[in-house]
Amino acid sequence: MNMNQLLTHESKSIDTAMQSLKKANNWLSSFIESYSPPLDGERYLTDKELSELLKLSRRTLQEYRKQGILPYIILCGKTLYPESEIQALLTGNYRKPIIDGTVSQGEGTASY
Image 1: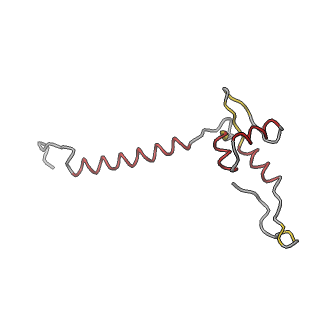
Image 2: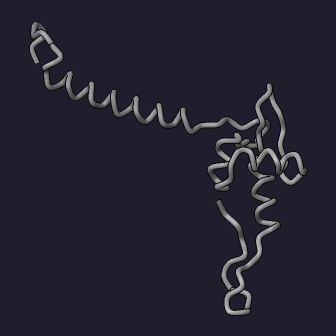
Image 3: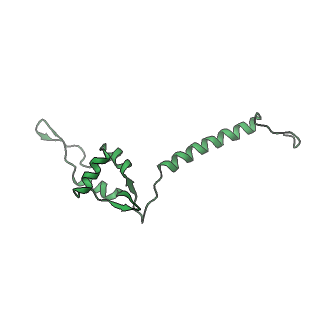
């Protein structure tokens, strides 16, 4: 390319650079949207995240908190659930399915 050549938005090199920037912007936007930083090494889930994972309404989560079923903290007015404790709760309460009167021999771990 000649140093005296004028670059415009129709130039192939500018178009390629703009497409790369758009891809990077989309990736970064989705990363930031899904990122939740750990507090003291623990990752916490919001009401919305936990209700989507467990396929429960946010009102049901509130009832479970009230009944002492779910571990949670309130930080700056926002309810957060420690991910490791939720996983332990699910794993500890997992029951193998009963098929035709016998307990299934599948894996005995819960995962979400």
